[in-house]
Image 1: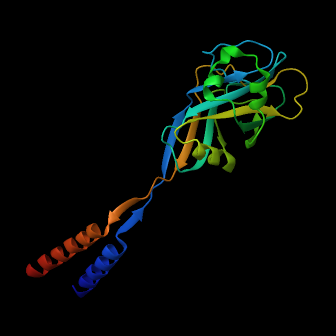
Image 2: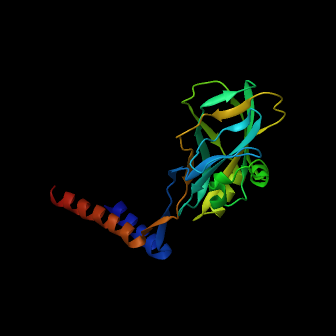
Image 3: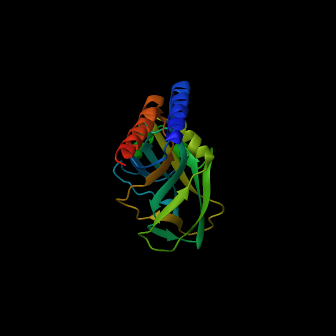
Amino acid sequence: MKNCYKLAITAAIVGFGLGTLNIAQAATVSLSSSNQGWWNTITSNTNINDNYITGNYSPVSFRSFFTFDLGTLAGVSSATLQVQRFEGSGNPTQTLGFFDVSTSADVLAQKANNPDTNIYNDLGSGKNYGTFNVSTSGDQNEILSFVLNSDAIADINARSGQFFSIGGALLGDLGFGDQYLFGLSFDSSATLVVNTVPEPGTISGAALVGIIGLCLKRKRKAFQNV
C-alpha cells in the first residue's frame, strides 16, 4: 500500500510538472502508382499505356517512370519501390538505376507526346536513388523490391502533399541486341512502400494519475475484503 502511495505521488509530480508523455508509433503505408510508363527518343506512345519497359528493344532505348500521389504522407524513414518482374532480355544481369525526376507529373502523364529527348534524359540522370543488379530471368509474376536510399527519402519528405516521381534506366554498356527489363509489363501498378514516424501522440499527466488512482482504489478494496 505504501508503495502505491509513493507511485501516485511520483506520477502526480511527473504528470503535472512535465504535462504530457509523448508516444510515437511507426506506420507502414503502401501507395500504388498514379501513373507510370516509358519515354524514348524515337517512337510514339499513348497515354493509356502503362508498360514500364526499361532498356533497349529493337532498336529503341526506353526509360521508365513511376509517379505517386503522396497526399498527406510525412515523416518517412524508409522507402521501397516494388514492381513486377515480367520479361527480361539480353545480359544475364542488368544494372538498373533509379533517379529523381524534375519533369512535372502532369507532363510525364502525357505519354502521347513521345518521343522527347529532354524527358528521356531526365529519367536517367540527376540524383541517384539506388543502383541494383537485376536478373533478366526468373518468375515473371515475382514482385521485385528495391530499397531506395536517403536521397529518395529526403525528396519524398520534401514533396509531402504533392506528386513524387522516380525515373528508371539501365546503366553501363548495353552492347547490341535487345537488352531490357520489365518487358510486356501491362496492367500492373508499381507500389511505393514507406515506413513513417507520425507526430508524437500524448498522454496527459492527469490521465497518468488517474490510472494510478484506480490502482489505489482497487488496493483499498482488496484490504476491505480481507
